[in-house]
Image 1 (cartoon, rainbow, N blue to C red):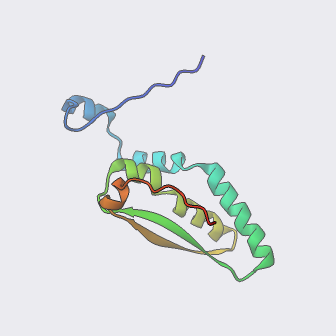
Image 2 (spheres, one colour):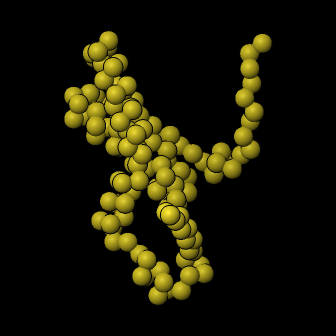
Length: 120
């Protein structure tokens, strides 16, 4: 039976020896981040872009990249590679794309979510 193991460490409480043993070299971290990107989402974005190009051949695709006010590893891990992966695919499919920053402040990040409203 497959098992799922979770591990949580912080630089404030984990001993240095443990952190050194689990640390990734920059190249390893980059490879890990690239592998984490959901390839299904990238595949789907490429397929949709190719369909749009059939009807609108001069289309330029705009992608958003989240830029957080306070940089944290988890934000880079979860949010940083998708736009670049899609742009790479589109470029090699002959499609133009531009990545635009989407600023996310700490205030916006921790603000309570607003309920969706419906038009009457």
